[in-house]
Image (cartoon, rainbow, N blue to C red; front, side, top):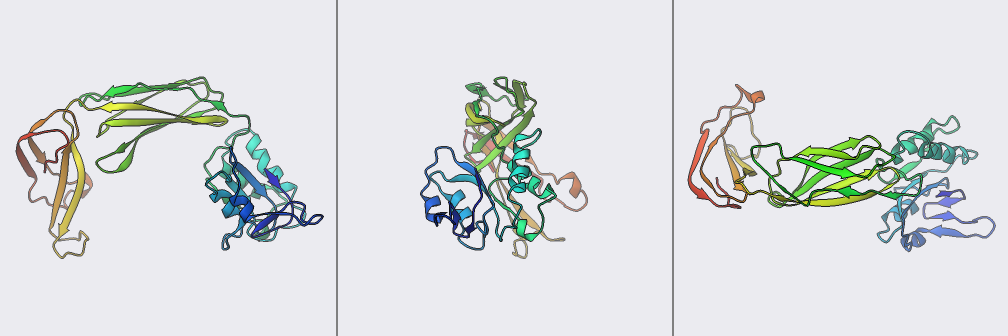
Length: 306
């Protein structure tokens, strides 16, 4: 959506000269757009981010304002209104990468645009791909379940329908032990490529998510349930106590390192034996005084060990 009229930090004009009408920050707050828009405005000061400006209200509306806006924090130079949208839209609808950020940067490539008064600020995600046609659906197909085998690479194949644009497939999972998102892989597929394989070693059971995105396609999401039928021991927490108590590991200092190991698999593990070795890059710099820690007995799944 392209806007060309007078503006100020708190409103953009909608026939401001002839009728004295504007669309202000409160109007932006009240928008309920089913499909959030991208706006480019050449109105003066509507992106003045050191104030509670119109651009911020437009993109921060949780009910459906806009996903992004290009707005000037300063007064707009006269006579450039035609060249700014032309440079922006030529990149969006032209060949090659049409991410929002690269399309915005194309404004500065115009020979008629330049200087502090043409510093259009992007409020939004610069990596977002911009739709240049009516978006279509992605048919994403993934296995319903996967059993993880400790002795294999655990190939995991997903498929999509034949797309006319390159697609990005990403596989990730929430780890309920560490409370973090773990990304297992992301692949960029050429247009008309319909499958991708990933190789997995997840540390916890549960639903794993796959997303598929492409230009002019609505993002698709699917999930696969991960099973760990075997024992699976891994580090879930680390902590250290240093000799002088300042919270930093320093040359010549003795440090007590604590590692928490958890069996997140579906089978018990017996008589855990561990060996602690420094990274090869620390050879000669770190001395391990107690390298071996053993724990006798059988440890059931989901139980901390050492």
